[in-house]
Length: 212
Image 1 (spheres, rainbow, N blue to C red):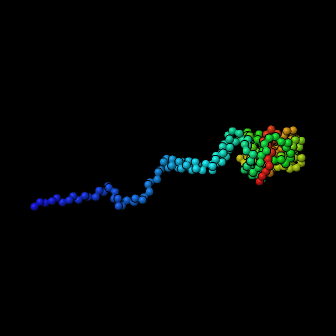
Image 2: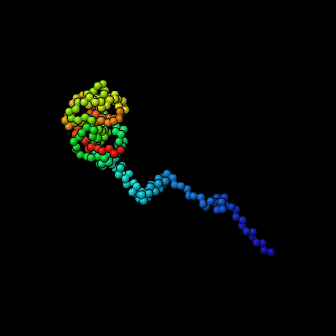
Image 3: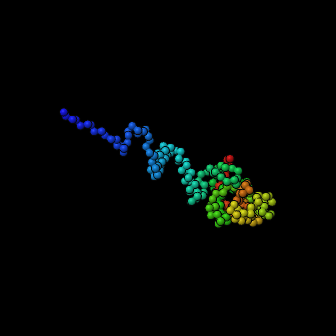
């Protein structure tokens, strides 16, 4: 009688994964570190290419802001935006060039006061103010109250926000080619202070029509 060998029984390989126990729908692991950054950057660039018309105005505004901050503060577009409380207007239309200024005109001028020595970032920056004093007008100072032809136009504070001392403008007569400018806010940095001073005709960038 021939004895046939028994079939070999295979023991389960403990290191071999059981396909019946695998979740075939389990998502692939998410990339980490630099790989995630690269994927995010690629997605953003694809979105920019599809929606370029949304990003173009943003980049244009950034470019103008960079130009004004580091190279030339002169406004490049006629529409101005005022982010300070100096005047109660947020949007204004600029008419650049030299004009015969009158009392009450709104003007934008390039700052050139003594305050630029303490705050270099102010030099050449456009300021939005009202013409309050003309050549030949008399400036008087009573205490810290400044007056033009006897009319109060502002009270000078004793210190700036960083506690640097402030001085009122000197009394006298406004000379030809110079103007006294005023902001309506109590905190406005205008001609009431010696550090700001009078504005020369050549500093005026243009007159302004407030819109709202």
